[in-house]
Image (cartoon, rainbow, N blue to C red; front, side):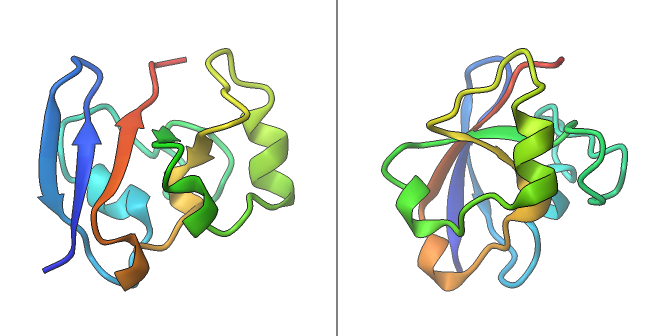
Length: 105
């Protein structure tokens, strides 16, 4: 089973099972770590904002148009590690992924 390590908004790290072929957002919103994903994955609300551990960033596809535009408007935007979890598929290559749920905007 593929795993990911998620640090919630309280700073507690959890190891959870990743769902292959599913957006990170869909897995994260099942837990009470702070990802609400109000728009349901339409890349329009940023309530699924996460910080990806820098060592994992090169393994992810680059953020595209709408995601980039939304991210730069966020108060807690970090250009080196911010992503919207609704835009990232969990693949076998991401087994062991480390991320942190971003603070509420």
